[in-house]
Image (cartoon, rainbow, N blue to C red; front, side, top):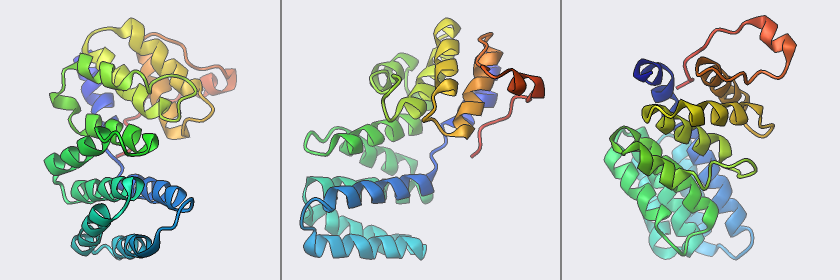
Length: 218
């Protein structure tokens, strides 16, 4: 079972930096659209422009200023983006530290904290006790929660590491059936559920196609 985890689980933990940057940018835009962003908003926009131009050091410098001058939402969004930049630069420890700070910030908007929690856990997954992964992410790994798919996949893999396949299989199956989960994640969790002995395919036509298990996209 550990071999199964190595083959299918670890690629699923990889953080997609582009997606993180896009989401953090959207969350900041949604937050700032409800208030006057002023100079901080201009600096944030400049940082996004520099990110788009792949000038990561300059973008990080702008974001540090936003973090220092902005309100709770702006500062948290800036820190999320800085964590994404650190990941892009293969600075795993620095990224995890920034995510942890947002996750622990009681003044940051809850969606920011939830995202930061998932990303921090995903970076440190290999060094965290499986039960700690479960304890931190299980509140997010419930149907109807916006983070169900991402958090649930990590919780399921933690269950696999604990040899609790009776919990992992049904969780993967539930994720694969969730209409709000991306197709790539549905396929991955459906395959994992099947490998654990849980039939997650509701559509007979899909079953007839006989898809072979595929590693997660990186």
